[in-house]
Length: 80
Image (cartoon, rainbow, N blue to C red; front, side):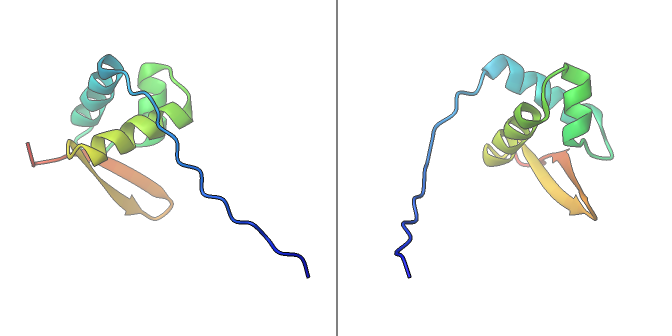
């Protein structure tokens, strides 16, 4: 049996403040929650970028997320 090496790679990603603000506005405008697809369509960006920016909003406390079945909805956070 061979030994397996497990490697954990951490990387930093650059977040554009202007795009982050646009994503935040999309989240705020969807009172029933915004999905990755909503942000993708509204801003004409790819899914991975939409997801990364939504998760950045969650990390910053500007949005919260809730899993509903197979969808994840992002809402404006009440914490400012």
